[in-house]
Length: 115
Length: 111
Image (cartoon, rainbow over all chains, first blue to last red; front, side):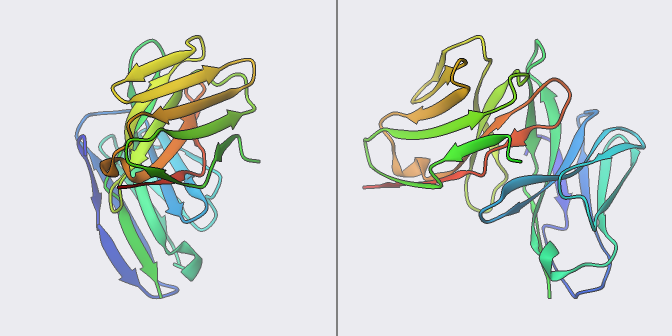
C-alpha cells in the first residue's frame, strides 16, 4: 500500500474506552488524512494534517482527535469510543501527479468494532 | 451538502458489457477529478483521473468522459469482466483542499 501502514488492522473494544489508531508513512508526504467508511455514506473525512502539528477538522470530526508529532506518523484517537464509531478507518497520504494534480493513496484500513 | 453526487448506488452488468457510472458536481473550482476502485477488505486505489480541460481520457478498458458545461463526468468500463466487480468512487479536488468523494457505486459483473 505505497508505504502506508495502519495499525491495528482490527480492533474490538467496549463503549467508553479510549482507542488510538496509528498511520505510518515512509515517503515523507506533507499531507495525511483520516477517513471513515460506512455503508451508504462512502468515505467521510474526519481530520487531516498539512504538516507536523498542523491539523484541521473534516466533516465528521466530533468525537475524534488527532496528533502529528512527526512527519511519518498521524494518530487518530477516540477519547471515549461509542457504538456509532464502529467503522472502517482509512489513512491516506496526498501524492502529487504533477502540475497541481493531487490524488490520495490509501492504507489498507483499520476495522474498529465498539461493543 | 454533498458536493459530488454519484449514481447509481449499485450496478449489475453482464460479462463483456459496458459499465457506466455517473457523477455530478457543483463547485466549478474543482480542478482534478480522480476515480477510485475498491475491492472488499482493501483500501481504495486510484484508477484513473482527468483534468476539467480534457473531455475524455482512456486507459485500457477504462474511460472518463468529462462534460464541463454540464458539470458531469462519468466512468465507462468497456468489456466488463468479473474481476472488475468492486466499489467505485468518483472524487473531486480543488488545489490543497481535501478530496471530496461521491458515495460510491457497487459494481457486480456476472458471467
